[in-house]
Image (cartoon, rainbow, N blue to C red; front, side):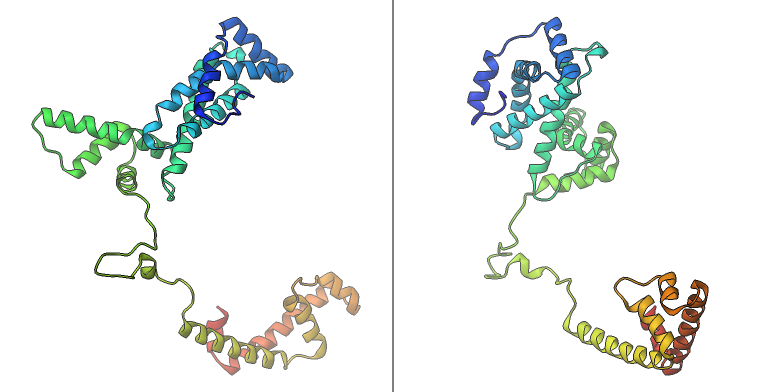
Length: 292
C-alpha cells in the first residue's frame, strides 16, 4: 500500500498526488470495503486522505519524534479508521478519521517520550498534550491582573481548567520536568567513580537472612521427619501420595489401590494429620510459627 515508503518526503509526494474524493465516491469506497472487503477500495480511501494524516503528524514534531515515524503512526491510525468506519452513520470519512489519526500519534509520542511510562489514562493523556499550554495561558492572565501565583495555586487552576484530579497534575509536572539519565552516570564531580547504580538497594535476600532461612528449613525438615515416624505404613503412604507428590493423588484413586472407599481414605488422612500435629506440638511450639 501507499504507506510503505522509506522517507517522509516520498510519502508526502505520494499524498500530494493522490486523488481528491467527493462525498459520493468516498461513500462507494467505504461500502466496498465494509461489505466486500475490497482492498483496492481501501487503498484508494486511505491514499486519498494521507495528506490529512501527514498534516496532523506535522503538528506533533515539537515533541522530538522523527517525522517519518509520526507519519507512519498517522497512517496506522488512518487505516484503523478506514477499517472501523460505518458509512451508514452519515458523516464524512475525514471527520471520523481525525480522531483515530490523533489517537494513534498521541499514543506513539507518549510511549516514546521517556523510558518511564508517562501515562495511559484519559486524564494523563489530556495533561501531557495540554498542560504546558494551559499553564502558560493561566500565568499570562494572572500577570495581566497583577497576581503572582505560587506553584500550588497554579496546579490547582490547571486541574480545574483541564478537568483532572490535582494529584494527576502534580505527577505529570514531575514527569515532564526532567529527562531520563543513565544509572551509570556519576553522582557528582566529588564522587568520582560512584555511580547512581551503586545507591540502589539490593532487594535480594541478604547473607544473614539466607543463613536463618536455611537453619529454619533444616529444623522444619527434622520435625516433619519425626512427625512422619509416628504414622503406620499405610498412613505414611497416604500422606506422601496426597501431600508430598508434585501432583496429588485423589481420594478415589488411593481408595481403588488400597481397596478402601473414598470416605475411609479421607478418615485415615485426617487421623494421620492429627497424629503429626500432636508430634509437632510436642517437639516445639516454634513449629507453629514456621508453618503459619
